Image (tube, rainbow, N blue to C red; front, top):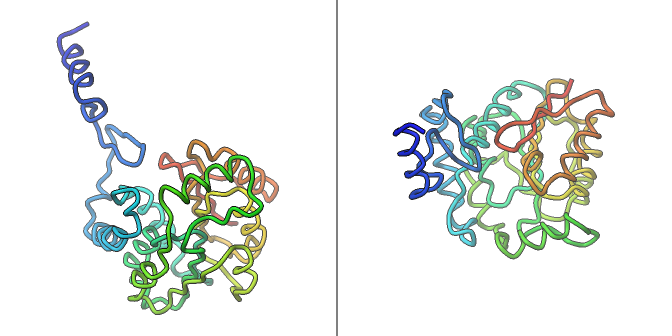
Length: 252
């Protein structure tokens, strides 16, 4: 073993993953890659707007998670479909960190669209859940979620075309008239709820519409992963797995 390798091992023993080369965030470490999107002033402003607005919403965790790469994916997807017919929709909002970034990035207040933001705004409903869905819901409800409706309302107040829909999915979805969808973000942390919602919305997503799945390829979300793979395969589509743990579907 060379001297350089010995030094690297010593640094790792002393500092752990912080001694490793490359960039790390949100469970992802990359080396020898161009990540200059993180330095784009437009994206930086959108992220900072979303991060600051979510400090209260994430107080149980103690910090706002660094999910800039996930936010970049959402901004990219939303930008791609901005000129398509159809509204924007998010299932699972909490304080709105991802959709706030999207709204700021696109200057959404000037868009001829609505952004429907569905959530209980106080955690994951556990009625009817079982197995992994129930375990994850209980864990998140105790460690992260609380009533953030006032926070979310404040966060989206600069965007009059953002519509916060409070209540339990899919009941609230059935009561909301949305005919066409260009952008859909899904983060319900539940196989059951995500399946019930996509079954109701798939035919409303316009050709070229983008669907971003937040939980898709994360550990402990294998049931969601399998459900989405089966659902899309039955319709001649395929989910793109991203290193962020997200999944991406482009409707054709």
